[in-house]
Figure 1 (cartoon, rainbow, N blue to C red):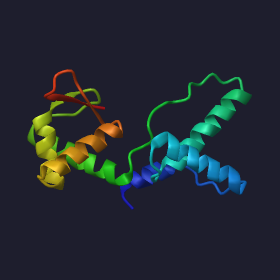
Figure 2: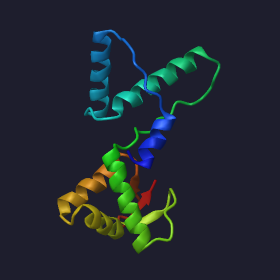
Figure 3: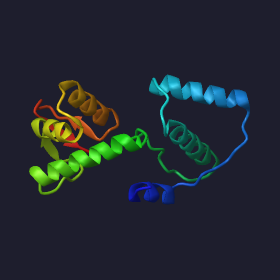
Figure 4: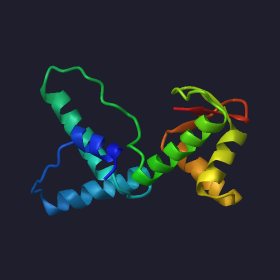
Amino acid sequence: MGKKADKVKADKVKVGLFLDKKLMENFRAMIQDKWKKYERGLLSYEAEMALRHWLSLHTKTQNAIGVDKPNPTPKTAMVFAQVKNYLLSNWYYELKPGQEVHVRHLEEAIAAVRGGDKRTIRRWMNEFHRMGLIKPMPSPSLWKVL
């Protein structure tokens, strides 16, 4: 396992539970309906959000429940890290959250890391955007790294 996976595991605790079979079927169906798919990490994310909500209802804590999307899948996070490293080694001194990058640089970095086919580049741009790692700016040639 890599260092990133070890860090994530250090922040998380594996829990074993016995739950009603129908309740779990309904919970998984709700996740499928909400996210239009069912992929790794969504069950943990939704269960954590449900527990946070339940705790906030039963304690005086006024913590806001995050509305962020789930963490990117490990493959997406790995590819995005490779793309960022390519950007840093070729064009940018640093990449802070909120920094704007040129779409041409992103596309070239994806091509170098995953392949130069236009469909591959479009797929990874869409995946990074969907997972909240980048977002388009009003100028069509700029994207913001989140």
